[in-house]
Length: 145
Image 1: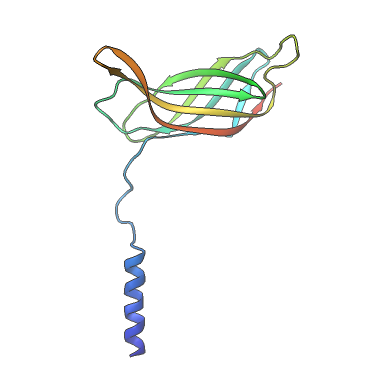
Image 2: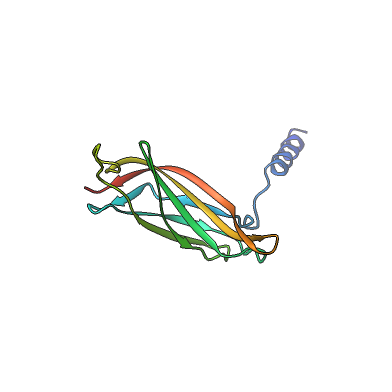
């Protein structure tokens, strides 16, 4: 009887925690590397990875990024995405102010990056509007002068 209880218990545990036999469905995602580069001339380079599934109803897809530090916020370029369900790297660059009349605007150190995977879709047949597929806001460390 004890043996039967052990077998039944094992079956119940196996049913409650099934083993994955197939890969998870692909989904749209974007991530940000924990370090960005800030050059002396204000050129910022940010990077990460993205994945987007092939959605035949969407237009072009982009990875757009915004850098935030203290009270400053600045768009840092954008890159075209390939939507094949695979993970791909992205890198965006853009120039920011490193000096102002009050002192440094962007400097090496802690910052936030907002990354968005977005497509342009036509609404009403003629006006392309952004459609957000995935997003992430992450702390980063700007490395540079």
